Length: 465
Image 1 (cartoon, rainbow, N blue to C red):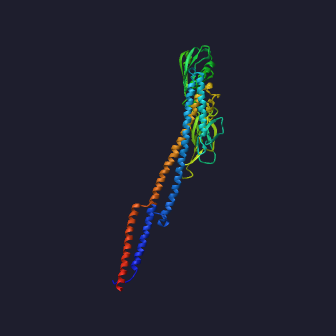
Image 2: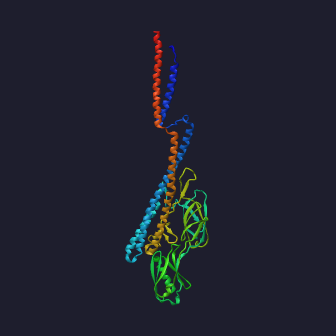
């Protein structure tokens, strides 16, 4: 081919050089940002997928933060309840020690009473000051509101969870069969022909020996058994010619045992009857019953209540209405993933029950102060301990089986979404680095070839000189 003066080769090389330079710029952008898709033109479909995944991840991360906040609330309440339980245990010990009045001086019992007063004041202080983000947790402000339309039949209502609806909820309570106390009956005793005798009575609280004289009446024997009830947990009544013993508590766990020791054999023929738990349905669902204490999970709500003597009769016990309250937590990314938990009021006038009494009555001057009724003070402290333990267990169960599982599931979802987004969005550094090296070689080659093209034009000029 002859030598001609033309810029075709130069223009072609310049186009190649521009394209290589642009590719190098794109590669450098991907390497510097770490993303394969930096604008819509890089991958239109991929950009849409990335934005959708980003939106899902934002919701998941918010839900995880909500779950962690819920755990913090539960931990604050749990720590306070541990301290309340410790104080109640100490109150129970002091009450138990004070029942042994023969071994303690009046000054020692008074010192125990002072400690109980201080412990109760501390419980009330802890309950009032346990807050999270300005919200009181244990004084009843965060309790689920529930009322029984037959308070003479249903008492001590505590609801621990409810559905997340704004409308009130009514749960029908029906007693299929009444609960019964454990009992023992002296079936052959004749009031007209009593002889000297001894027999023992044993209940859940302990044992006592009852001595009978020849001149004792049924009424005197009954009163003697009742006087020992704080020691045994067993009361007594007279029905016709029978002297009957009954446990103070209802249910299959109630216990009464009477046994003949010596003397008149009329007291040896003793028949025993076991206690039974009431059978109760709430909103048509069978509830768990311990004596007369009913625990239910029905209609999306869970809680407890106690049947009174008037309510411990087969038939309807009225309705329980739940109309809001409690703390609601968002445990997922959808509106239907909310859960509501209630924190019952645990001030001293709430701790205990309407059967044995309430903790505030143990303070000096109260009906169950040590100087008045040390045995019942023990029973009240035990009932309060059970109540606090139940609340603590409910909070722990909510945290473990709802909050923790929700957070674990959300973390797994987050990992999967991030992995999917990474496949679409994130750059492969090894591939892009190799591409950059290739582009550098091509760029340098194009520049060198431009020099060769320039030399060709120079050769033509040299012929003209």
